[in-house]
Length: 224
Image 1 (cartoon, rainbow, N blue to C red):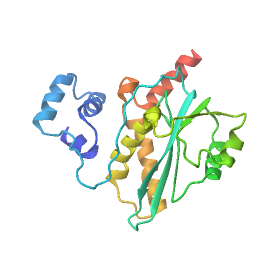
Image 2: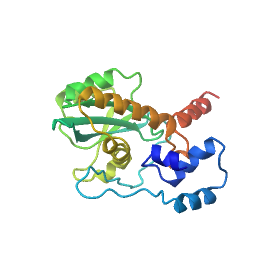
Image 3: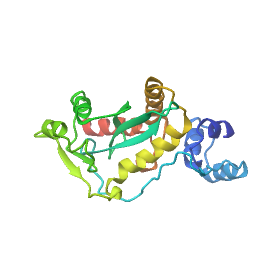
């Protein structure tokens, strides 16, 4: 347990228990929780001016299946050289699958168009804030007849709570855990984290399944 908590420093007791249970090392959650507390492994809140990310939790209307609604947003960070780092995140509200990420110093509407054109599937709706990139003529012209936008009200990030919650996890478990010295290095680390998020990170909203496990079950259900 101590080894897993050291390896996944931002995992709490439920996810540590899931990892142990997957290896058939534990059965009873209450016993795991007792030992977890006795070992003093609780997640520590970050202090001072260190990088932080607030996770906004507000229930939204749940989509009935994958690719109905994708939420998208930007997260900002910095390289150790002081230059800006910008990450574009797109998440399926239903399956929690990361549909894609762009990692660069700057991202424009034309970059978003190229990104969406490279995807094999598009959702019914894209939920986002009123950022200039999302209102750009390049993106709006491309989206006409392909996908609808669900813009939240200005100053109401809680209306985009799914991606806000994801951004908080992404910042806490990835951005705050690494130093980035170049864009290429940042892309590599973020790609590795994305793979872990899909295959090794259980979600309470998915019944403590990983997005990959949940998505596989959905395919079986849809094709059965």
